[in-house]
Every structure is written in structure tokens, then in C-alpha cells.
Length: 121
Image (tube, rainbow, N blue to C red; front, side):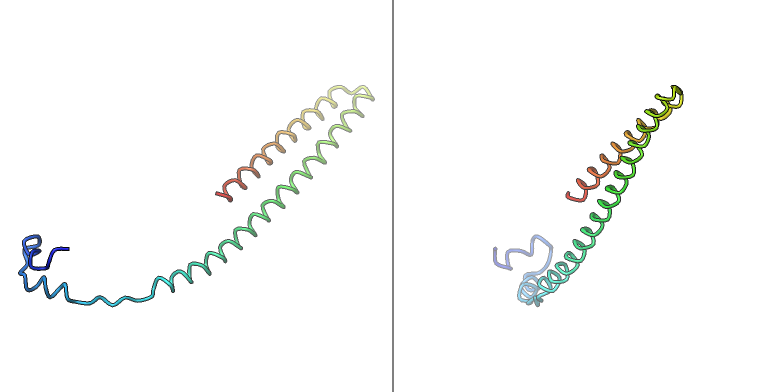
């Protein structure tokens, strides 16, 4: 760094004021260590909270999948019964509901994958 006397032309100050400003000592505190410790404690609390939310979301998706799987199998059984009894229209309605439940399950699975991927990033 050039000596303070060569700097006055940059800011329009006198050489004496620049020399005085250069000699002022700026106190340094250890605020970085304190802020790092605070960030670490809040970070670990945030991670625990995020992990808990991910587990809860996973449990909800697993429960939804089980319910939908049960509904799909029930509709298949009902469709078979209606087919045996000769009621084609009711059997078709059961198959349509089964298809709807399958689409709901695929959306639920896509949603769970999307949620888990965003929570990872």
C-alpha cells in the first residue's frame, strides 16, 4: 500500500487527516465465533425439525397408499362379483373407480417423491 501522504489526491483530503485516519486502530471482536456457535445450534434445531417433518410426510404418504391399495382391491372384487351375477354396468363402474384410485395412488407417489427430493436439496 502506498504511504498515506500519496493518498490525499484520491479523496481531496489533506495529508495530515489521511495519516491520522490511518493510525486509528479498529478494535476487533470475536463475534464470528459467537455467531458461528449460534448458527450451529439453530442449524441443528432446524435439521431436527426438518427430519421430523419428513418422517411425518412419509407416514402420511404410506397411510394414503395403504388406503388406496385397499380400495383398489375392493373394487376389483366387487367388479368380479358383478360380472358373475351378469351386471355388466355395475362391474364397469367398479373398474372405473379402480382406475381412478390407481391414478390417485400414482399422484400420491409422485408427490411423495417430489417432497422427498425438495427436502433433500
